[in-house]
Image 1 (cartoon, rainbow, N blue to C red):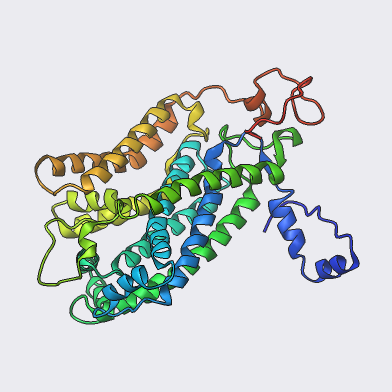
Image 2: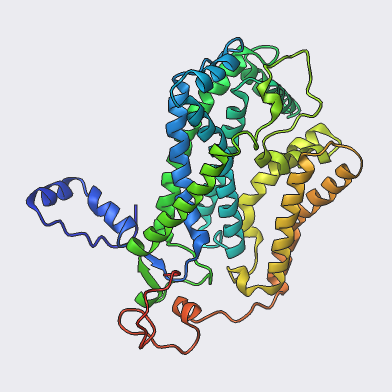
Length: 428
């Protein structure tokens, strides 16, 4: 997996025999023990480990829930209630899985904004970044399919609305819609298809995550300064420095996750989903889960149905073109004073789109959504290319070490400033 030299030396005869035939231990050692990481990484770089932990949690709880779930329109709602009331710790598994989806998106949005801020999409990491966008698309599909499975009012009508907009796609739209429905409307065949795909996609995500980690170990990690490792003093071994930080951050995030499970298990859901699906009664206000709201606002901002669908999908796909839209030679926004202001404006606009997605599509909400949608695309198509051409960046440090210690500092053989006796910095 790693492009770096394998320094693992087996000591026992059994280990040598095994390593000569299947160098698995050496692969793990070179990728997750001796792998050099920049010494200036901050805690934003721990969200990769958090996401892997959340993915494994979702897969394990999902497999267990699937053992008790009945994917039929007649029994799906009651089977979820059976899990909650009759299965040992079923309530815990269900709340872990439902809130785990939200926590997964919390972590992935932080991970994505970090990549955009620090320029982690720039060469030579384009493939690494595009694999991340593919993971995000698969996550969105998996989350949507999972949201329909409880077969409450919001699940049913959410499935109806989203699958209906696919019919607006020219040529293939109606065919895709018919395949998903399995009939002439949303019903039991639809639920069976959604359950099958929801069970399959997490394993596809896991496969792309393996490729994502592989690509990361080939190109090496980016860092807050956005400059490459130039000497051994710029880097530290992945273990124990990065692993200790990753474990600590994952535990802290797990405590945050536990709060939602045990104290606010239904806060991020919708009350209408505790009412069985009824095709004859339309909810007063149909809204998706919070992590889809920015794109839902973009969809509704356009009066034309096909135009809204195109913009909604384009809002995700345009992320994959960031490596070529950004013309600046400097990666990190820490050293780009003008772009940094536009970046935080982009973050606020995205959050505002999420808020507008939860509001009724009327009056000032629609106007605000249109303005925010316009800026969302202008950020990628205008701001990133033009600012990179005309901006004068701040001075970059000569090395990663200088970004940690400051200019003019000498280091001892241990990689610490000369004369220092304190423990290594948390940034190591």
